[in-house]
Structures are given as structure tokens and as C-alpha cells.
Length: 247
Image 1 (cartoon, rainbow, N blue to C red):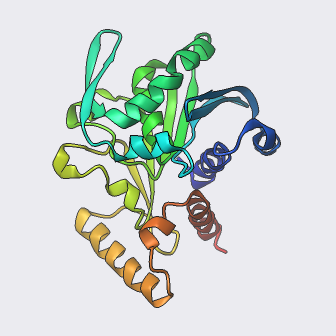
Image 2: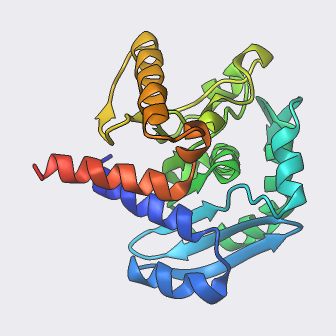
């Protein structure tokens, strides 16, 4: 997927944090109108319509206690869809999605194809949502996603997935690998300079160590949190686009 296309989903994911009073005009700037705003017990998302339909999930908000609780849970539960067990997923992420899932199913019943996206907790919700409607998903595009499920869940999720990670984003490192959680999808890694790079595991570790050292020298003490902010994802993707244009 081209960086310019990824940028659109990054913008959508950022706007998804806002309520319809402010988001409507911003979505319109990118050619989308709100079909439905989903909102129940702290879980939120949008169904948008433009050239294609987009299902976007809101990420963690520190003001929402349900978001914090969802993120802190570590145990796994079965993800069963159409009486088929798709493996185990993080219980907090599943619980958040389940709050609004009946409303989502009702709205997308007559939609054949759509994109699914989200940031942080929203990325985890988007990943589980995509696993439930695989035949409808054009692509899944996530930003700063935590690990969502087990190896078996990853195996049963057969959708095109671009999983974007901004450099040292610490949220992408949880829940712990040792607890059986695994990432899914094509890893799109944005390095310190905002370039998309395909690196081995060892190269990734070295790049992130270098980034943390550089950040320290610049006075950025919390780069793992800083790199998770959606605004900084957008900044880095724009740098990649400028690089491709030779600016």
C-alpha cells in the first residue's frame, strides 16, 4: 500500500477520536461522510462512506476508565465466530468490540466491501472486527497496534493487513510475547527519520536503540509514548511521502 493511501487511514484514525460534532467536517475534507457513529459504554467507532466504506475504531482515551481497564487485562479468551473457534484473543480488546458489535453488524449487513482501521486500542478492535467479517474486508490498516491474539488467531485471520509501527512505540510491544500474544499482518516500520524500512529483528532492535539515544540527546525522555501519538504517526508518514517525492 502506498504511503499516501496509508496517510488517509492515519488521518481517519486520528479524527475517530473526536465526536460527530467536530469530526463531520474533518471527515468531509477527506471525502467521507458519517454513516453511523457507534458509542456504547466507552467503546466508539465510525462507519464512513466515500469512494469505499471504512470502519474505524477509536483508540485508548485516558479519560475513559473502560479503556484503561481493557488495556491492562492480560488473559485470553476464545474468539468464536459463526460457531468456529478462531483462536484466543486479549479479553479486554474483545470486550470493547463486543459492546458495539451488534450495531456494527446491523449497519454493514448490506455492504459487500470495506476497509477497517484504527489506532492503539482501536487497532486491536479493528483486527478482531476484521477477523469476524473477513469476506468483506478489502484491507485492514492499523497504527500502533498492541499484540491481539495467539498464533492460531493470526493463522485464521486471512485478510490483507498493513500494521504500521512508528519507531519506538511501546504499545506495539504489549501484551508480552511471553504470554503467547503475537502480531499479525505486514509490518510497516517507520524509522527515526520517517522512512519506511524493511528490517530484520536484529536491525529493528539496533534502530530502536539508536533512536532512543538520539531522542535522549534531543531531550525527549519518553520516546516510547511520544512515538505512539497519532499526530506523530502522521508526521512520520508525511516525511516518507516527502522522501518519495525527493523533497
